[in-house]
Image (cartoon, rainbow, N blue to C red; front, side, top):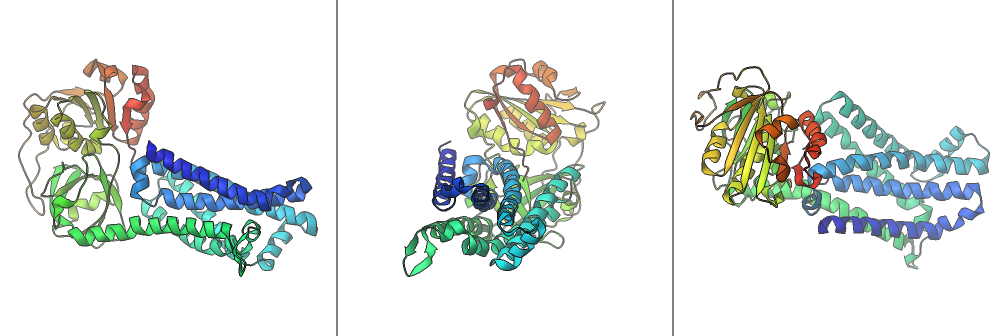
Length: 473
């Protein structure tokens, strides 16, 4: 919480500094009439637009100091919310300024807009930057509605950096609020305190971006030389990828966290995806258990041992540290069991009373089943399997050919029981009558999570005792 407070405090300070210099140069003149009002707020919207752009970069720059406060999941939501404000200021800035100058020149709106492109330094570059930003915003909205490919969205987003470069000169070379502020030194009249402040803001954010997105992962890769140790098929559509490397025991993570992975093989180089760590921290390997749910994940089984792996992370705040009481209910759906595998062990080691409701379509879809049953026998843990398809179905026997390897043992099936239907409040109360006294950990498909997040509070469960991450990067 203190990190969040610090972040919001810094944002407040930034807005105060920006507001002060704007008022001293432009805001103080708004009493001079409509044109002055349009000019003043047009300039303010430009400053706010620049602020929103830098915030967008900061939100998704994967800075560990910021991720530790919010988690990448919540930062992604802040990123989308901030994008709405960015859109407003992107429209308001040129619109208000063109309207202001048009009142003095007597030109039409279009004529005044075109005159800006040739009369002011770097305005044409800023217009191109605005078009690029508009393209990215429109593409993001369409992608979210039409489920377009993540990688296309990723490459489209790279144009934001081009937009920032194009607009930087415009901001610092034409901005009246920059030029009207007091100079740092009289012999450098163009270097004002306000421009110096913005140089620092840009330097801080892009240094953070370079370190956490590029330098730190490269350092991690060359330290550990991550590579695939083996692959195992857990279910018909789930593969576990075991990753090892130099001094792998020094790669620190907490059970429940996730990493962003890029497999350095043909067809995989240009794609990086987040996957939960399904292994408990150990000195031998790290493990990802990946479900074939798209074009990319359907090919995971084709990877081969010794393939190099580029890793960013670990990230995520959905860990056993969230739990503050002795009684916990964990609700997982499908591949949502992966972060819970390690969390269950952490909770079990400290003797917590844990109930797990694990939903799948059929029995053969149950991932990590043997390990769950071992944990159930070892700790104060009870597992409830819920199958949505009619009938229990047959168990899946992992094959042992090709590039598959690992423990081929069958489930213990000691006290395994199955329930049919879908996970809802009635089923939860039936399986765990004391649910209202428990903290809730939730991870599963988006429709399941959205439904439960709406209904669980009706079971007298406070929202601050429901822990989840959507992994919507």
